[in-house]
Each structure stands twice: as structure tokens, then as C-alpha cells.
Amino acid sequence: MDMTKEELDLLNSKIGYYALFGSRKLNVAQALEEAKYVSRLKKKQEELIKLQQWVMENDKKVVILFEGRDAAGKGGAIRRITEYINPRHFSIVALDKPTEDEHKQWFFQRYVNHLPNPGHMVLFDRSWYNRAVVEPVNGFCTPKEYETFMGHVNDFEKMLIESNTYLIKFYFSISKEEQAKRFMDMQKSPLKRWKMTPVDSRAQELWDKYTEYKERMFQETHTEIAPWTIIDANKKSSARLEAISHILDTIPYTS
Image (cartoon, rainbow, N blue to C red; front, side):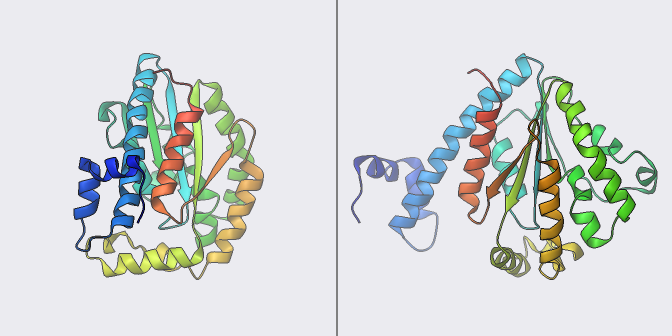
């Protein structure tokens, strides 16, 4: 295959060697694609370090929501975003089902408890938007609880933003076929099998119902001050790069 000088230099770098010889089969085209991805990712991760430093020095608060269907790649994207930044100044929140006491609280209370202090970033691996899609689809909330949430969420986010917080809302979008493929890969892997939950096992069966609630969520909660950013997540590498680029473009940090 024909390659430019830049591509040859990349393959002759440490990143390129790892991509070439990191798998059992030598595939130059595939290795070049992997090396390009890793090179771009590293550059963006360097910028994330600068962004976090700006957040810390200026007492800013950042909240990033990661929503999407099961197996959409939310966790993988979060890991790439946080890989090199200071762990003392960010947290990843992935809440389990609410306790009995939490059921009796104001719905947003358990999320408020995890909001960032000045100088910190919080990344929610699923968020309060569980009540917009996952809960009503699976019967985990009543119709009244769902409607109450939909009536309050925009005001909640407005208050959050007006308290000097940057709010970014991602939705990782995958096709039904890609979700089925990823579920199959999980079930085959001893290292990933634990990720499959009873909710996951019904996701394909309830695909259309998820779509119905997802569309209403977009229609009613995509606001001027708190818009949704939809990421095409069928290819994990490009989804991760797009998410990081959006964060870097949205938060007005100075390097």
C-alpha cells in the first residue's frame, strides 16, 4: 500500500510499532489506522490535562453526562477521558439502584450529593436521565414519577448551570445490530460477561420502546442552555475522539 511520509514516520514510532506487533496477525493497513487513532487520542488527552488545570486554577465546576443504550461504549469513553488527568480532582459516578431511603427522597437528591465542588469535574456514567428512558421502559418508576421528572428536569439543569457549572450531555447512539454484536462479544468473554445485566438481556426485545422514550427525552430536554450532543458510537474509536473534541471545544479553557 502507498503511504505518505507522515504515515511512514508514524508506523516507525513507538505507537506504530505497538500497533503493528500488538496483534497476532500483521496487518499494515489496520495497524496504520490504529496508530492514527492512538496518536490523535494522545494529543487530545494532553489538552484534557490543560483543561483540568484551568478548571482547578479557576474554581470551575464541570458535569458531564454519558447516556445511551446498553453497550454503547459510555464507560470506555469515560476511561479515555480520565486516563491521564489528576484523579484527585475528578470523580466518576455510576449509581446503583436507589435504596429504600433514596426512594423516599427528592428524586434529584442522590445526584446532587455527587455534584462537583469548585475545581472539580464529575462524569456520570448514566445520570438522572435514567428516569427518562431506562426506568419507564422497564417499569422501575410509575407514570406519575416519570411525568414529574420530565416536568422538572429542565429547571433543575437551569439551576445547575446558573450556579457556575458547565453541563455537557452526551448520548452515545448505536444501531440495533451493533448492540446485538456487542452483547454477543460480552457473553463470550470471561472478562466482560459480568457486564451483562437482566436489563441488558431485554434491551433488544424492548428496542422500539427505548426509542420512543429516547425521542421524547430529546424533544423535551434538548434546550438552548443544556443541549444534547449525539455521538455516533457504532465505531468506538471515533466516538471517543468526538466526545473529547466536544469537551475541549465547549469548555473555554486557556492553555
